[in-house]
Length: 396
Image (tube, rainbow, N blue to C red):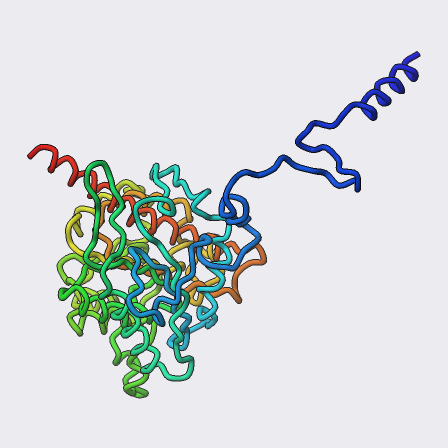
């Protein structure tokens, strides 16, 4: 009896008409309802595993080769790693970080922590590709990075998207650079000084201070050896590129050179204040956030530099000089969300070395999300500024 009932039910299903949306054509193929949308609506969206690789599926623009091309925020790669002191490979960082960002898009970019989607807000954000950095001449590479940054940084911001009754504009676009080893920060800071006509506060997340004095190995001292990824902020300070009253290292935990804490004294002379990695255990992320905001303030121009080795090697194995005992990606994200009020005028994510990453892209995924959080902060601050301007105008 049960067998006959099952047979009858199956026969009913087989002869039942298909829904109109999936009816079969005479050739046996499945038809769908006619799409009345535009071609863009029909075909523009890419999946996380499809499309040409740019950061978060942003439009690629040949910014450096196109005179007058404008934008508000840009992703720019600096594939350079010949100033490293330990493990190379960061020249492949820009490509790896872009690849790991492919699940991000304007249609799926709403940041729940910030209640903001930076990829679908007021700003025109583009991926400018990479600076064609020379891999065989460090001095030339530094000059190329500086000139590229000046070229793009002096262009006017292009988009004024309405926010209420007003709009938001900036005098200069903001560039977020993906490195590359940490030496790329020096030529960028040189360009920042030229573009903004003032030293900037440096907010530096890193396991290392990167303020080595060039005479550390005096016997073998040469003009070329004076520059490496560990001396970048020493040079920046000596050249007057940073604000010595409001610059800050965060996440420090590396060993020092020599037999004492001379490295700290050298760092003091360069104008930095330090927040140690282990401070997070005593004051927590909220304490880290309040210290940063109080020390730097919300109005000064800030250059944000994030070395991926601020994270623990379990969170970011793909880096050139890993140091155990670092932060988790969640802790870093919480801190970045807490400092979104800072006036960030430029940023970089450096030292992501794909050859040492896991097969699951652990480091690249963390790096791409950090860049996304930076974009969120920049975009959200611009939107809030516009809303504040609207309120002031309405009060007049």
